[in-house]
Image (cartoon, rainbow, N blue to C red):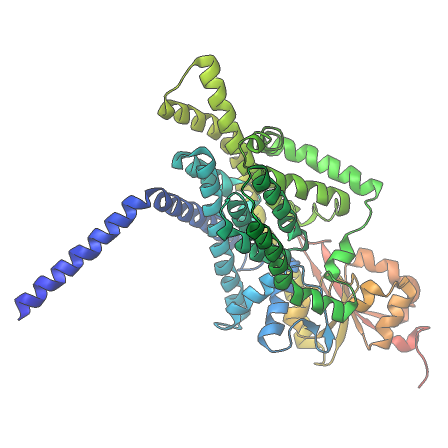
Amino acid sequence: MTEHNTGLENEEGKSVESLVHTFIRQHQTDVILLLSALIATLVSCIYYLSTMLAISAPGLTLDDSWIHVQFARTIFEGTPWEYSPGYPSTGSTSPLWSIILVSVFFFTTDPIGIVWGTYVVSIIFYFGSTCLAGRIVTTYLESAQWGIVAIIAFVVVPRNTWLMLSGMETPLFVFILLLSIVILDKQEMKYDLVLGVLAGLAFLSRPEGIIVALCIPIRFAMLTAKREVSLKRFGTLVLSGLIALAVAAPWILHCLNVTGYPLPDTFYAKVHEPTAFEIETWDIFWSYFIRELFFLPVGAFLGIILIAKGKPFAWLLPVSLTVLYRLSTPYAALINNNRYLLPVFDLFLIAAIASAAIFFRLVFIAIIQIRDDVTLNTIGVLMIAFLIIVPLIPSYSNQAIFYGKAAGNINDMQVEIGKWLADNTPPDAVFATHDAGALRFFSNRTMIDLAGLVSPDIIHGNMTDYYRMKYLYEHGCNYIVFFPELFVYYYRFFPGSAIQILYTVELEDNVICGRDSMRVYHIDWERTTFYTTP
């Protein structure tokens, strides 16, 4: 009996092994891309995280990252989108990212555990984005060799790993944009409705994700030109638009209910007609980007080749995003290590590799008369590596150090003061600040955001500075957490006897915070003109 069972087990083992080998043979390209993306992503993440741990304790590199975590906590605790108790907010730039981060709270509520959980979620989407970058280029060039090149280049883009591990929505947004390109490039009707879902999710990832929905009519026009549109197909186009709206509708309705506006307050706080200073700053930064990231002009100009190949979206999306940011938020797109622009950089990289490979192939065939595919690919890969990947390595390494220092800065300033507020203020205390993330999360105190990102009354109240201070008084706000250099601007409303400095944090090597120093002020309203005798 034992020998019989052993024989059956051996046969089953061989059968499973045979199935695995068959699967690998049939999906060899996918397996190669998957493993390449996994190795490249993990190596890059380990490098950045180990560099951070050599500099500071685990942390998130932007204070805004803690805003997403705080919104996730409110959802987990059953009071969704109330940034402070009793104050509904529409200040989440990426509600989908906050919803995804709720998963972390099912495993831990410890702040360090939340940080590591956020890393894990971010790495999953980073890995998915790397896979998709390799898949898109492989499809365009019909060679896994080029897909591996794209994967390596993708993780070496200097700001990529920094922002993918920042705790922001960047990995989610990039993943959805890349997946949208994959689906937009497909012509079969079965993908029409999937694209509608992706368009809705793109909007929930970031408001500018609406450009995915705007690409749907372009895809439809391309299909019409190829005479592949029937009445039924037209119906799926309309239905995909309705699906996109249905996916985005709950958040739009929430915004309308809270503020009367359909978009999050972060949009209204940042989007405006650009000033001359903002345009000049944009131009200066982009002159630097073009020198640092050689693939940007390559992708912008040679990327037009992809239109002729019937694959326009890897070029159209980054061009559209660049124009959108330039017209609406040229300065905001540059701050925080250019976090809004990273998707633009990533997409232009894909367009650059694909279009440059096609261009070099045409040149080699026409001028050098090389026609062997292996030789063409080998020479092309070496040229792309030399022209695009190698120049990125110094900035990529510098960004790893920057990453560690930035995490340390946020820990030493905003996180530290948030903990101090928790230990040194009454539970019902109300404080005002511009840095709305870690201070609120760690203090667990009611907060008023002077920038209005998570405080609807501030952003939509059209308040003068005087009435903004009066608002603080009327809402029992006795503490203000601010950079001293900027708080001086409000001194005219407070006599010296009304202000008491309770706590100060000084950063010796500040690379990411707005100023080197931040203070906690206590306001004695009875000594001000705002005070009204009961």
